[in-house]
Image (cartoon, rainbow, N blue to C red; front, side, top):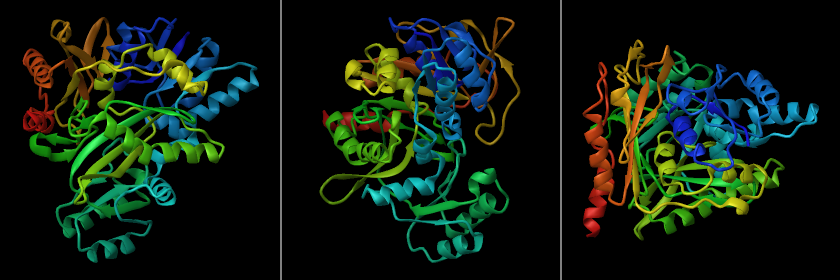
Length: 437
């Protein structure tokens, strides 16, 4: 089958690498792609938010399956548009990704919270506001730590964890008055700040059934020991020993399956990947999951580790989801661990940096380590770092410690100005494994 993969980050390069292993793959197009995807298929110079041109290209290029990587095209209604255009031309294109109605789970924090309340899905206490003064007064009256979330999309940076009410009110002003996140901050959700272990639970969905992926753990903060500003993610590993696969399935039954059932009931079946970001809080009887957020697509950088563990025909699994028949190609998973560490550019996440050429020899992988491209571009046969999260150095091994050793040994060989990365990825997982010995 001919596939159009939409996106340009590390997630899309990781998916493209796995798709290239699929016996059912014909031609692979990536729009717009990056320096890494250019070596795997044909990059198409259409931005991920230009859904009109993407749909027209898919129809003209005889695409059989469209895979949407990032959230923006999904929240804009890419799935709805491509189905509408295909029907008008009497064509059929399978689409791996949810409709605009389903993508509201990520497009609006308030809608997401309403769904959780409706379905009795455990989450933090919260209130939503469109008025700055009312939100400010609410913060002044709180007697517990809190989080401020921009209601709309903010590239993973719209969650603020203030250390005081004064800081919280200042951040609230930045969001609602100064428009730090544009219209995405016209409404805010202020919720209780939960304590515990964060776990990412992702599942394939065909609109009715789900298949849960190995539980992973992301690292959002820029610096070691979870310090510094929030980012799109500085590293991840899976499976996390903090949450067994059996527990992951239980948590998915509590937090993901009810959403899938509700969307089917509403006549808008959820197709694609549903991601539940959970906080495992202690309730006196052990860990109790509470939902922090939903994402309507693969996480980044969780995808970089999950694709290393995926064992099967990814193209077939995705097309089976799109056809409403996941049982036809249920995913299988390798044993062992996978991890990834993000190398970000100078100034990330607060500012961008100028493009800088990367050494081709330094980017070469090995049987032990993969170099996944994120913020890179290919020009005149040369690879350039284009800012943001630049590379994801990844490894999988029977031992989590060995996988991390492989990654950090490779990182020492890669050089570009102002490179930033965390040196404690998977630390909590390794400590937990040592406690189990």
